[in-house]
Image (cartoon, rainbow, N blue to C red):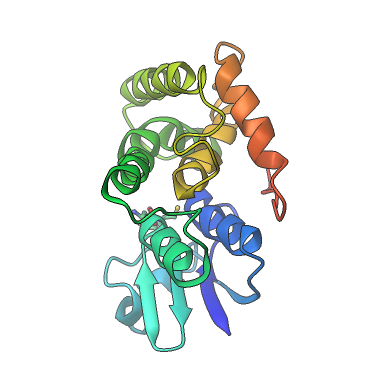
Length: 198
Ligand SMILES: N[C@@H](CCC(=O)N[C@@H](CS)C(=O)NCC(=O)O)C(=O)O
């Protein structure tokens, strides 16, 4: 059985829970208590030397990083739909995995972490990055149903959580109607599961 080393409030872990559910895969959730430092124990560091969740174990295969896990699940269990293999559409999807790990992580996700967990960050800079990214997404989605390929892919799964959770960081999505429409469409997908705060 697939095991997910998981933190309930982590948007990165939620990306993986969402993908597992969209694919209809059963899995065992292994809750990790960050407050107790369970992600820095010798045992956990063997799974992920970076000491971060999520980590997925599937038999002998251990994958760290939400984006990498989405790639693994899509290729291992999904059809061509979730991650195309042709050069151009595949790279179009992967460019959004980078946005999820960079601009979204250092923008909306950082602001959320500040307001939810008192994380010390350069708030002004993170808020600026959040709005820049939301503007780019809104323009991109103004003429698209999903981020790429005219269908849901792991690009959507990777970007969706922290964008949908933006209000946790006191960032209103009112100015971004196309982003709001996309969030609603993702929520209608068969197998969609919610996360606390959405
Ligand atoms: N690039 C990683 C980032 C993972 C990450 O930052 N995880 C956070 C929880 S959302 C974590 O484990 N933080 C604890 C730490 O870094 O010590 C991914 O996308 O999975």
